[in-house]
Length: 328
Image 1 (cartoon, rainbow, N blue to C red):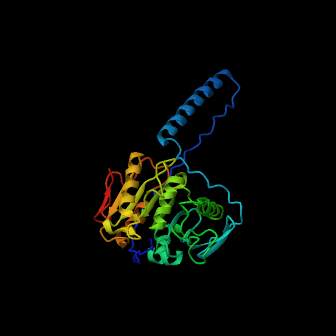
Image 2 (cartoon, helix red, strand yellow):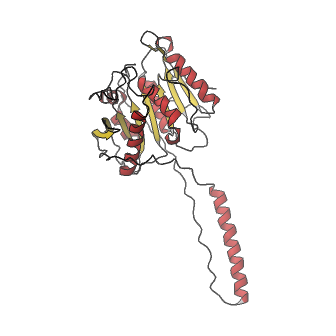
Image 3 (cartoon, rainbow, N blue to C red):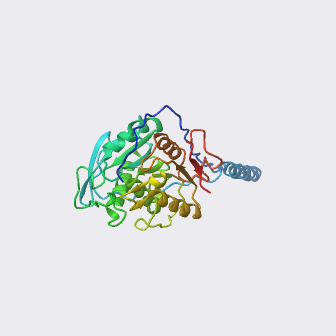
């Protein structure tokens, strides 16, 4: 599950963000005359105003649903500025690499999770995290697992890196705490929270889909999925997902983990549960082609929490690499 994502030279491409509409609150009419005739006229005016207000609400439609806030972080929040951020979660000192867009206030958040044996800094470089923050207008956060430098032996799972087999709260608390602190500091756009990762980081992203769906606008596990040690759990809500796999050679430890099979199993469960899923298939083994990684990021940024349908439900854009298809 060692990360081998090729470094991405990000071309300039524009991702259009949907703008949520705001319902207008109509002011109640005020009667000012004291005669019977003017009272009647006022009543008529009030009825007309009420009808107009009702029509306006009907035209505008219901208010856009909003995702919940993460539970308030009980510890001391760090200052989420560009560079390495360190803070204590569950009694362990954790680190993450942070990249900010030109205007972080009100920006969405993209979490990137590295593979086993990799580090946040290396994975961030391979994924072009700094360019992603600028081009997508997102706060990009790339955490270190407990097993990455500096090693936190007390919470390191050397088999998986991220704690999705046992001791789930160690890394769930990391996700929850970062999300809460980012919201407190930057008043983030909670309708634009995304998760992606490769290998062990993709298995962790899969775990978040199943256990933190209420916060995610979309997710993109690259060589992840579900299997007997990361079993399927039905998410609380539907999350648009894009995933990748690398054919029969997409394995770890001589086939101990078959990412092709685990991704297929994930997609089967997701589609049965009504999620919109895109799968990108290549035959390069346990890696991610740069063009596919780029499209995963494009897919994520195109989605907002609460969308009634995926903007790609009618068909994938021309930027979709060969091998990417909507899962039916």
